[in-house]
Image (tube, rainbow, N blue to C red; front, top):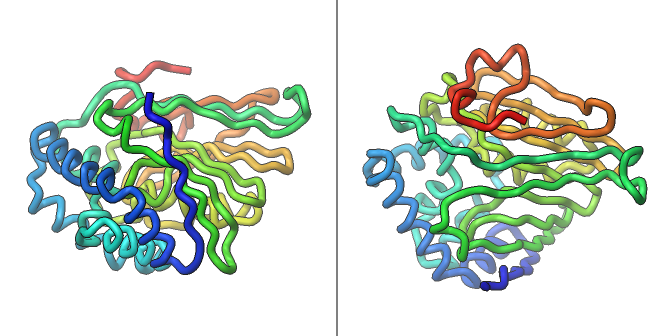
Length: 276
């Protein structure tokens, strides 16, 4: 069984990205090729359309998180790729569930958060499974990133991606669940995986929430956020709106359908995703 590599990167945005890209060069390049095939053969989205969409995201990401766009430039340099290829990787959710006419189906991740009052050692606990395509199972990594003036972060993700599941040194953690809604139309918004990473820039829970709610989002997605101080909150978001869910008792769970009364009418997966 493959041991998941741990990549330590420190310094500026570009340098951290370049360390990621160089250490995982073969995996990043393989992920780009594999996703281009999935976009084309599985969803009918040709590489030219993927690249046009990714190019349209450059100013969007630049405005929201210029440091993460610079990190993607570093990943591209380290892996010997064009930054547009890396940006397309990070926008795979938007491409798969927004650009295509036929929605992909199938269950994915389930997340859970537990407040300190219900845990053995009285700590906040969050955790999830990650159900995705077998093709990337051997192309994942744990990134340990330290940048001047920003929280140190620990992120589990796919090679070439800047974000997914993670935690930072201030005890802010984020989990990810796919959501698909009728609001997902392939619009040029901040990619889901970029939003997940930006949550980890927060030093407090309100900053983590703002990273999601104040962004121009490119797709739907669920964000289960935990705080070491003893809080758990879930944000269901679409490109057009968002809503909050809080713990029932001391536990909060989420899978791949909307639970919010406000948003559930927009859900395109409720009939195919297991209900928690």
